Image (tube, rainbow, N blue to C red):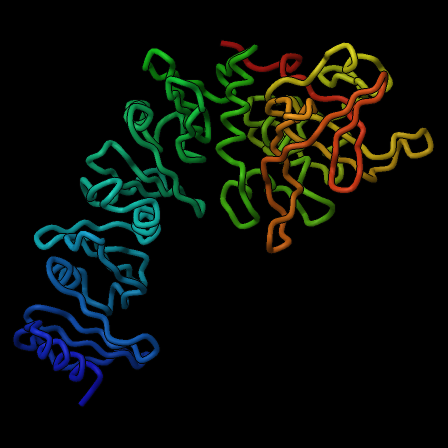
Length: 417
């Protein structure tokens, strides 16, 4: 007897009636076998075992050309309630079924749905996944949607932001694809934001949704800082191999660290298009990347939009960066090491608090960090600040670094409404 015969006998003994065989045991060129029955399809992979496809998925697999077209399952499971099941196939499709209904997703969308909570959070799909703008999207009855852009990623939108996104045309509209999940803004009324390739959606305290196109009508003043924080919170934390970190450090060639890429990515995302200042390869926006120029361009010879505080009493007098400003620090600021890059670092300032001992703690987003796999990543970081006269220093692991200054978002020439 074959493995398929053994499995059929095992399930029959357990009370699962596969019914009459509709085909002989059929062999694929790679040595795998399958047989379709009245109530199920058994697919034998000697390296994995025997898969059973049943219910609405059985009819759909037959209509789709069987394993010769779909390939074999790569994984299968069901929900805890025992009323929904799914199979992912080698052709990157995925069947999701109840006892009477079936939906066709991509395996990426299906896996994202399962990992994010599956039926317990979103319920079942409202329809099959739809192809749009070179990628895919699946919608749920709970007003949530998961999006799979052409690059390897998947993002979740829900509620009013998701509805407004589709009012704006969805992935094929002016906003383009999402670049992160919906982000809670952390305020008392629960406002949220979502970032896209070409703009941002944000709920207001009155329940409305504002639309901010990137590069067309970017907000100014305080609004640009809110947008900067929302962008950073959408992409940090992230790691080498993530779509988010891949966008941040897309020009990284492997030399040095990635700290400067976060700042230049943020400036580009905010709509800055000054060639020679933003160090990023974006030909459509007139920008170019030069290896080794991240720090130099941000420092901008120490003049606006850079605010120099080293050697001044500005910080002793209370001057501080604000949310979204890009801070430049360095270990050795002696004249003989003025051109040395040793101990240089840049990060995005988010906020400051005071701890129980009275120390001022800066909260920031930093690329150029190392994760457990010793790979480049972006993380949120807290550091203590000390200010004495003309010297301001931040605590790093095992050393203090001087605050040179920061790129002030309010001094940037951003597009205005």
